[in-house]
Amino acid sequence: MAKGTSRQHGCQLAFALGFAASLAWLATPKAWNSMSLRASAPVRRRSRSLALQAVPIGRVGCGPQLLEKLSEEDLGPLGRDGELELGMPGQDDVQGLTLLMHQCFDRIFLPKRLPEGVVLDVLGIAEAANRYQEVWELEDIEKGLKVRLDLSLQFPTLRKPTKQEQTVPLIARARGPRGFSDGPVVAYVELCVLAADGRRPEDEIDAPSGAAVEPYLSNLCVLPGYRRQGIGSAMLKVAEEVVSKIWKGRRVYLHIDKYEPAKSLYEGSGYIPVKPTGSDGVTHMVKELAEPEEEEDEDESGMTPEEAGRLLEGGRSQKALGPGTSDETGASDDLDASEESGASEVFDPLADIQKEAKK
Image 1 (tube, rainbow, N blue to C red):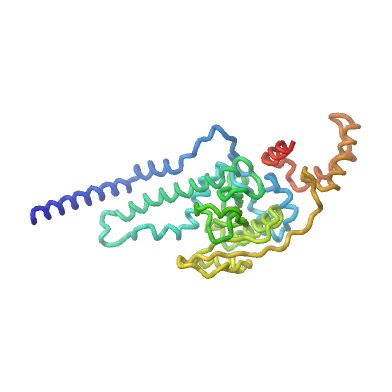
Image 2 (image 1 turned 135 degrees about the vertical axis):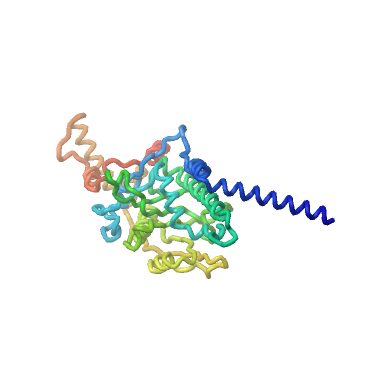
């Protein structure tokens, strides 16, 4: 019996030494670089056309309509002449968004990591294991982003999603050396639709058949160096205006944990608990939005009767003038309005597809 026990202990010791050696290798720069490269390698998609770069909010579908309804006070630091640009992300932003979310929501991953710096950890096993864990955390965040942003990268629009796994993402970008095109993303938020029964976007259980879905806000985060400047409040306000003015929604739902800055922001903005905080410290909250203003009836083309009449008159004038000519009286009022808002080229392929489907 003693001989068998001694042999068993020897095997356990050999296994422990082998495991420690493997973790020690994981702590080397070569191993780290190899895993980081694999985790951050971009996915090559050849079958679809993706928006590689971010699109300013004035050029996405329904973006001009949103800007018309937002005041400079609503936009705050996201104003038209500010140091930040509001928009929707492109494929090139996915890796930056991954790092932003990992940094801002680090508290969620801490319970899964080993304590470092303890006396018994002479081989640096905990540090190596945590570095390996962080690689998988980044990979998991990036994978989730690519799934949720898949449609918006193809069709950047503020239109209301039709499925739970689809989302409308909004970003705020600071100026870089060459302007906003190469500046860092400093704030981010997502909007989706979800059954208002307490479920979260990561829940894979489908909503009950016929259950009503409501607007749901998640992943609002601001880069640490840009906090306490009103950026988080401005992003929250813009997201609520998208729900109210574009989606015609009456309320927004979200979940928050015990993180005090987040609780202070949402409670100060009018969010109240749907039910008592759960055993995991997460609270399901809701905010009632102002009732959307009544608008004139629209025809199938999405225009009011007055707009359709103006367009018809403009078409008659253009037809009389002939191709390639124009005058000051034949210009469309809608075109003038879009030019004044800086959105003369609106990138909304989804609207074109829907129009073709109606023909």
